[in-house]
Image 1 (spheres, rainbow, N blue to C red):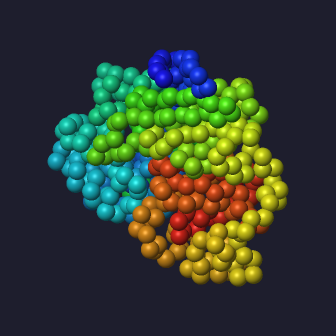
Image 2: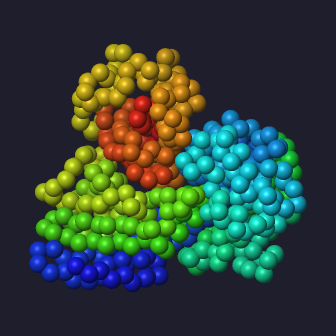
Image 3: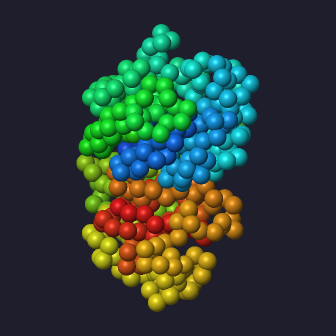
Length: 470
């Protein structure tokens, strides 16, 4: 069967052909931006200020958003504090070793130095140039997927990017904020986000320290933290239109979207989708999940990729879901369709409505059960006091599997539990009653694993446990 690909403005229609026999081609679209939003925005913070940990981190957590923090190695940032931000899903990036006038010669060494301090899936994939001076572009692109400058207008280019990103990935613009910058108030930030919503583009913001906070060496152009808080509040209110994500994540999505090929065909009540690209390199596997939608006439759908459950929703004649390129065949099974069919999050009305599973948290011992469907034993038990209901990444012993060190679990702005850096690992979500509400497996660099009623949830990833709330 032949497939042809045609671009669209807001989403890419990957298949629009007719098949023969029992199978037929099915329309599948890749969203321009994650969640079929209209524009993207990235908040980046330079210099590794103490206030980035103590003030920015909690502010972003309040709204479910993630940022990029660019560290100077020799300024000895709070490594444990920034590791905590990485554990919550933020991107830790390079801002050179020394913050000299030009970081030429430090492109690889600063990346490796920070990688030795911070556990992240790819290590360090984004760099921001000190003093906005572009170093050796070839060395930058050998080590990073993004090289960030400052205002594009300072170099004769736009301050915002279009839906296809920058013309040069070694010169990605970000608008300066604060006293010496162009963005000072909440309205300044929201005006830029509104602009990229209208243009289907991408805006990035560059902040150093905050007015009246502990900023260390990040003392240039301090920004009113209330302006950013107001911007994030506005973004959450308009989350269906604006995607707020770290610079490296947006870059991965954009590059994958431009390089990916999606093909779908259906047979009976089952639709099969192939999502592939060939842009993997020595910096990134480019396995950030892309948002897809497929024309669909059913009222329920069970979507899996390589057998792993994917979160999905049906709306307006489409089934929507996020899937990872090159991670295996995607199967959409309708009512009566074949394939695994765990409880759909769309059918969960409250945590109490989920039926009890044998793989529950045993209440008598406060540890994960000893049945064949449970994970671990005493080392993975729930916390030892009433104030601690789960072992978290900050308190548990080091896992036996080193690949689990970079796992992160957090809530997204659209109220999903997200697991990052868990490729190939079993994932189980328990509600506050100890009932299993989701089982799946890690696929790409991050994925949505569950959305449901408000409350506390325990997420089991391999041999690690995490507590999170919706």
